[in-house]
View 1: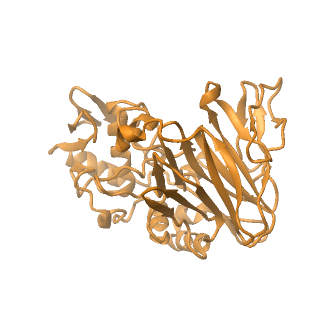
View 2: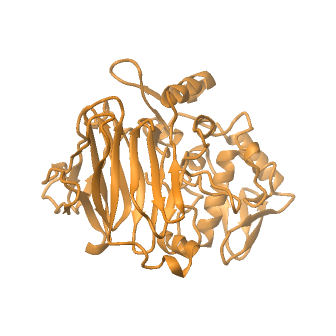
Length: 394
């Protein structure tokens, strides 16, 4: 799952360009230099670049092994067809310095890294790409250490972020040079994966079941609750029910105010029965625990409209369990109050506590925040220089 930026009432690219103003429009070059650094301690590391090509009708694209040639997989006659080109970009040995590649304009991009062996990508009719999965036990990559970061590079800006929306595994860090200075996202610290897995096991219950050990018996990754539920629907059954019921009870007697942080302004809602209604906008049925952790199952919507804005902010507040404390979302949010309930998203809590700067997407709408604060671990510029992506510790 690609982490979803908090809706601002426009496409992500347009909304982000608005942040920079007119100076950012068409400010980027046609290609971006990306320096890939191997600090994993393993001399065999591969990189893959995938996304959609805005210069080819948003067709699926890969970079080939030379790190510059674009490959558009054709639609195959049958599912599970291997890629028709070598798209494994081999990194230099650990500690030997970067390998620089050239990335063209790309939307919804991912930069993947795998340690010790290449990743397997398959092509289905369409074409559709069968990406590596951490939730499918039969996936050919299931016992490989791999991870990714995300980026969009268009005519107006570069936006990149680290993501733990699906799982925690290989440390990935970002550094972007810009005319205004260097932006950095440090990612996981020394022993970060082990710290996260240890804390999840100490939390106990279904949280301990998020830890996935590799063939050597050591932690290979930790799944997000949403990913874990997708393969084991019984996990976290009713986990947030008491909290959700308390929220519904509270807002039967007082307004819940949500600031869309866009031209729609604030919306006021009240609960009647099992429905939270925002007059003139729409309504939400009482959500389930899986809906809260996914941020996308009903009653939440991912539409890029006012209801999408309300969904993003409501889902974020449920994950952080701040709705009982704060009736003005997200304007009056206090990060010190996040995840303070006994039943909360402990995966997100543990991740943010482990990250040196506290930043990195832990659930899809982790970029919902009061103005002037961010939690998502991003680099962003209308005039990007070289983007350095480090696999392993910086």
